[in-house]
Length: 210
Image 1: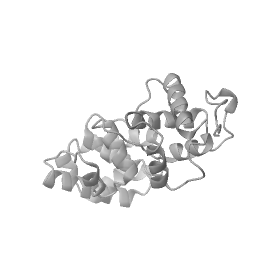
Image 2: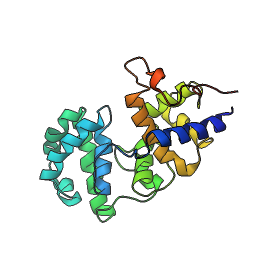
Image 3: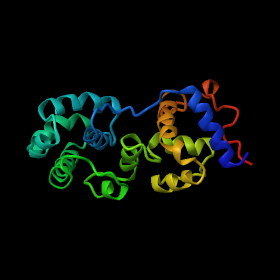
Image 4: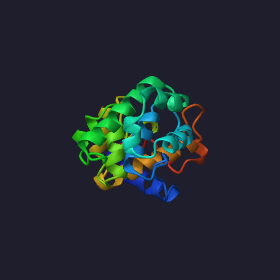
C-alpha cells in the first residue's frame, strides 16, 4: 500500500484501539497548557501534572504568575528539570500574555511561536487542543512510531517529520492521531524496551509500503 493508504489504515486502527485518547497534560485553562508544555520538555507529563498543582496553588492566574519572582517559579518547577530556563521562559511568557493579550493566549500559530520557549511542537499542541485547528505534534513518540511504521523514511528532525506527515494525514485527524501515538508509544511500541509487536494492532501492516 502507499504511505497515504497506510496512514489512513493506521489512523483507523488506533482510533479503535484508543477511542478516548487526548492530551495527557492536565489543564483547565489555555494558559496552563502553555505552562505545562514548556515544563514537559525532557520530563514526563505525569511529573508535570504533579508539579503544576503547587505552581497554580501559589499562582492561580496569569497576573499572579507574571508578577512572581523567577526564583520562586524555579524553586517549584525544579523537579521537572532545566528549572532555570523553564522558569525564565514561563515568567517572560506570562508577562507577554498579561501585557499584550489581556491574559489570554494568542490564537494564531505564528504568534504562539514568538512566545518564549514555544516551538512548533508546543504551538501545534495548543492549536489542536485549545482551538481545534489542524495540528501535528511531533514529539518523541510520534517521531519514533511514524518511522517504525513506515510513514516517514528515517527522518528524525521534528519539523521535517511534521511536514512529511502533513502530506499524508488528513488535517482533521492530525491532532488526535498524534495523541494516540503517545498512548501507543507508551504501552506497546516502546522506546526503552523491545516493542511489544505481538500485542500491536498494527502488527500486520507495520512497514507495509509498496
